[in-house]
Amino acid sequence: MVVFEVVVALLLAGAALAAVARRMGAPYPALVALAGAALALVPGAPTLVLDPELALALFVAPVLVDAAFDASPRDLRANWRQVTSLALGAVALTIAVVAVVAHLLVPTMPWAAAIALGAIVAPPDAAAATTVLKQLRPPYRLLVILEGESLFNAASALLVYRMAVGATLTGVISRAAVVPTLLGVTVGSVALGLVLARVTLAINARIHDVATAVVVQFGTTFGVWMLAEGLHLSGIITMVVFAMAASRRAPEVMPARIRIPAWAVWEVAVFVLNVLAFIIVGFQLKSIAARATGAIGARYAAVAVAVCAAAILARIAWVTGVAALSRWRCRPRPDGTPGPRDAVGLSPRAAAVVAWCGMRGTVTLAAALALPTGGDGRAPFPYRDLILVTAFGVVLGTLVVQGLTVRPLLLRLGLPDDGAVEREVRLARVEALRAAAAATEECPRTDTAALVRQSYELQLRRAEEEVARDGAATSPPGPAEGDGRGDAAAMRAATGAQRRALLALRADGTIGDAAFQRLEAEFDWTELGWAQVLPASPRGGGEA
Image (cartoon, rainbow, N blue to C red; front, side, top):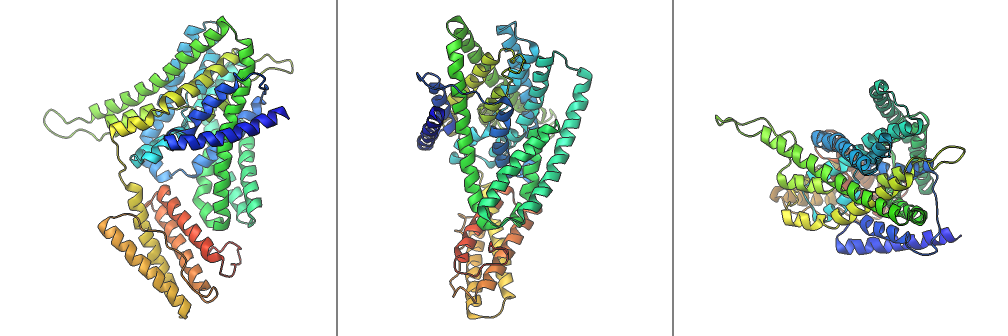
């Protein structure tokens, strides 16, 4: 009961800290991390040990699905070199540098355990960075690179983590089997994610109750993770592929009356899981602090500081070095002819922002908590206390040092929004309204249907004028006035045409998922507004 009371109190404190962080323009995980560290110092605070096998599934699976569902395949393809460079190159360099630093500071630490520590602290959490960046509206491409990196860096880091943990516990690793194992796990995970996405969509298409739909969404999320892990595949890769594949068809099978509350529930769940991760680490640090006193505590602190500095510097060296090398390769020839295309395409200022946005978060905490604790006659993971303290130190250090300074850095560098998403929103709104106006022409010529048609035609003219002068985006259309009966067919025809036009624009690459989701939310709220006065459709959601 004491643990439950403390958790409830800290969740409320986390909500308050998030409000403070929004006013400060800082990422809320930075303040929550400080609260987790303070928890370890509170006298009488209970200790809590989470089942290691539960840590990754509980904290990583929902957070990863939420991020991957919103990812834009079109934008990721356009920036695949930058994303791949960060997800593979930066992660590999960080693992190597951290492993060397840890082994130099603690010579008795097995190399496999040092590599496991490197894999734990290697993947940055883009959520902390983008929380701040989205408020400042930097070039959209920077957000795509950081968010895309967060989807795949965890996969590469945790594949190395799993092999390193296995080698530490068994003392054996077959170098000849590493590459075939990685290829087999990757291919199998991609195939499983695609298959489960189709199965899940088929199930969700038959659910029209909000509570049931949300429960099924969370149940399938954890089920996909557990199935992937049970088949010895990569839960991370499976979840990313599953969510990105499902997001392609989800707008067609999920009505607005389910989608809007589901988004709200997922947002709350991700927040709660982030707060809980820091709370549980704070509980475990309490017991570690009781054991690590004097010289041992000082050594733990020294290792944590050194590893944090190594992780930050390794990322800066990789990002700035790769960007500079790419710019050097594409310099003009001595005879004046232009050089090759800049494959990376990051200016010094943009590279500085990407390099500094290396805050660690939930994945690092969950991987550290997932290290075996021993029991059932098994030995605990070597240096588990040191690794857990170091991992939390890296999370705390990067969130506080980088998280609280990324805002002034971006303001100093002056990287304004390029308006790419706004332009796509305006163009897509015009096409959607054009489709809606055309659809109403085919409806019965009633007075109320004529009002609906005139409303959409007026909105279309306004939207076309906005595009012509490249002004601010038009306000989302509201429900047309009518008697609630005669205009039902016209409104449903118009909404259905808008959604089909929007899906077609995303499918052919005219707009990305950021613009698509903005307009989808507008259409959802508009539909729910007029659905209150129109007869329910056979599907129960008002969807055409």
